[in-house]
Picture (cartoon, rainbow, N blue to C red):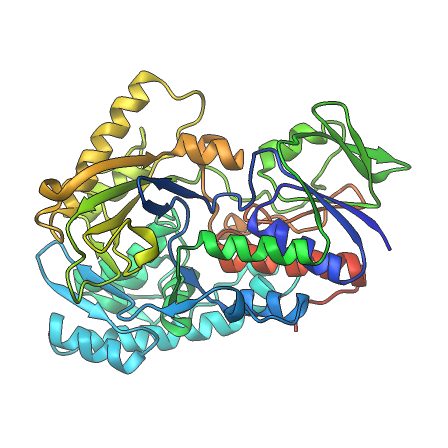
Length: 505
């Protein structure tokens, strides 16, 4: 039985802790803040309850596997999962609307043909077939296996089978997601549908590889799910599973140093001087936090994946509304930007910020646990914004207030009486994300993607210091709830089975 110290109580870290405890190890988790869950938090006020991190769960099979492997009770015995159908309603710049059914290619084709005109659905359906091929080519190495030692192979190969595009005397294939949209989908509304998936993960579709087609494919193929009571309930269930497996949690415990002995990780030291010896250390924190804890060690060796950098953040506006949620209201609505090019330039140009009319995701769950009574509604607005390094200043506050007003104005397209019904609002800003995760500027990691020279891969879970492993969104296989959960499975496998571990089965 090994002693294992886990730094951070994020979703990936807790997934690793539960799996390691089941394998017979003694696991202690040291969390800098007062609670578990990392970015998966909850705000409660006056009978209203809101998720302040992710609001929906993609690819629930990852967490089903976690609960299957760590105890007798399956995931559905610990939380109530609800399939969101339609998966999303999309409102485009020209006023066109379409609601896409959950996990149905035929249904999506029919809905798009009806809303956008004959042929639109067929082009989207054909795109999904090609995206599935990219998914099949990358699923194992980018989700279920430790990062290959010869990872440059993933960086160089474009897995998306782009359609040849003839232009003048040249034949080309799409190399970026934007080119996939322009050359294969053609309709600006289909392009907006495609690119909004990348934008939600903080990726610029103009430079994101065509391999980013796997993001809308995941949403389509595996469906979108909601956890009754909010995604925070999933974090609670994982935490309780850890406790049931006798994982020890120490909160308000900041790890300042990863201890070394004989050239390997040997435990951690806390800010109050407490020393906890360990045979392995698992770090589920942002790179900036880990680099301060291991100042004298090259955590990443030469030739290692540098990891994603310079990613945007998110601005979340929580709205408490008087009045009942209207019957038939769609759970998730995406209101697309009026000017797509302006939005991308505002987000990814210099200086970076947010467009005056950004793409906004509106979540309106039908969940009585989120409101004080049926005569009220809890609504969450989310938009991608630039990360904000450094201390939050008065100027930043003014900028955030403008962004908030812009998001509410956009949301009025689908909730016309929003301002009349508004009781109060709360913000969750890049500074708030930075506070709970430690990521510089509140940056949010994206899932690992192939191609693009490797700049969208994440560093491997092993490090240059033997006995030290990394887990969570900032290490392989990257950000998002499914990927963070898989990182926990990979780290547990590497510790339990050793370097010969070849991945999740």
